[in-house]
Length: 356
Image: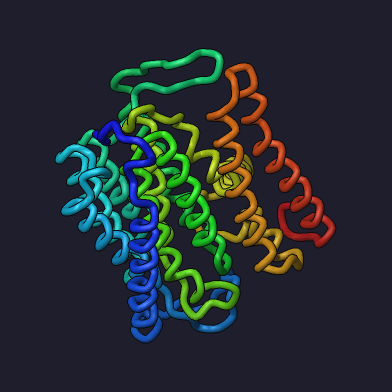
């Protein structure tokens, strides 16, 4: 568990320097992957039109794992207990390996999901699961062992949501970077120093990758990047809710990823109602529809960065507000997503896109 320290005990310049160093390390790996990466050939579902290498997420993974190993060796302020920390490292490495295999061989969704479940189980059975939830107006609610199942579902949903949303240049990477920076700041303020430091490590890896992917993509992050980022953000959310001198709300990561999770949840529900195969690849996500109606793909990505920023500001307001204001504050990101849904569907219908 994190030590009961204050923000004054943390060397922020040193951690920012470490983040910058990891960004440079990530950029070097990404440059290598541009030369040897797996080619992503465009098809009917692609937003790109030329063959582009993928697996740029290897740089993100390599930078994060290097950083977390350094944290394990030297970061006594930021360490969890031995078992928890080894669980994080093992689960992260396993998730990276599973998603890289997916990039290489394009495995079926069920095999991918089973492998993700194994990686999530490693983290959960190392102790990274939540059973006490801090709910507005109600306070702490202990759901006991049912928390294991809920935590597994949460990890799997966030992991795949980030994978599904990675269809436009810079979208998933930018959302991850912004989410990590907000997570780091909030966790530091609440003495959650493992989440603070680990979020900066992931931010460093993404920062090294992003210039190669946005605004014009020299490489895509691939499943090894998108699944890994989603998996680690879910793990950070669990750690934030469970560890630190004052455990944070389990809603923290869902707020930061409100744009991503709303898009994926709505799209899955719409396809289920329509009787479509939800495991089959498609171009029906809201962000894809927006791009297909003629919106600049860069603008769509930046809007999702704004959604992540709004989620971060909402999380801060939620944590600082009196209990009576917390529920109304939570409604704001949902209303914004409803407005985005109306905007995209209206454009899709005017453009006579299928299903709209």
